Image (cartoon, rainbow, N blue to C red; front, side, top):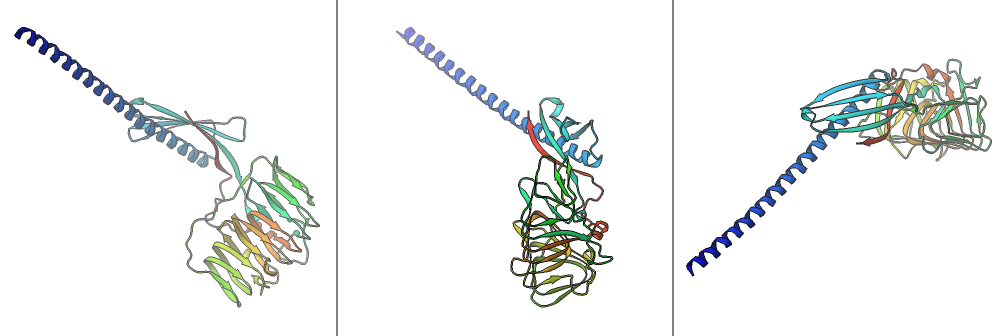
Length: 366
């Protein structure tokens, strides 16, 4: 009987040991599997980050070499490395293929990016330009007129060089008249006519953004105000009387610029309408510039609002030019381009020596 009990105890012990061994093996397997999965995920993130660094490096090299292609570059970050190859496929732009490698090339990931090359234009070459390339962004209606003059001789003789441009479509209706040419991206349309025909370009234009700045006060011109040579920063500007410009003035506006009620900018004491004396840079979006909606206004300045929509209404007159995300010019308003703006010195933040900028249009990871 004792021998039987000992045999049963031995068998029971063996079974328990087998169960413990199986459970231990399963636990070790699960732990090892989780470790491998975790390590693989970590290496995957590292490899992707290295490949993204390769893309960033490739775009930087494109900008610094004016689009050199084909080209191959390598770089090292931490314990990993990346390679990036730049090629020129059939579309207008470049194809960047970057591979990120972890330590000892144990793991790798690839990213392929299509980079479109956009021409950087000088906004001072246009009477009006619409930046938005997804919609109709230049609309002229009513009896609006666009033309040009030379402020060296004044506005007595109009020169017929009131050129307009757009990254999207242009619609000219009513009896609006454009005495100049229109620049369009191939594939976009012009509804209506311009005096000097349409010039097509293969790539859309790129307008640099206004740098970030801070402003603490608004400018409300409810009585005559004089600004002398310098740079001024405002949260918003509202002009209902005369804003008199003496010397060279740059005005940076964080949100909105509005003018109406007979207000003027750089008109008083400026008989030849020299628009090069005053530059207005509006950083805001939405309706960033509204001239004439609350009564007529006359402005002699270059107005640059690449992120905002611009309205010109009534019998208001702009001597200078208008650059916006979109332009809506109607009524009996007039836009006269001061051709001396073509020679105007650009702001320090304008990349005058860059003929192209690079815009990522597709992104694929492998």
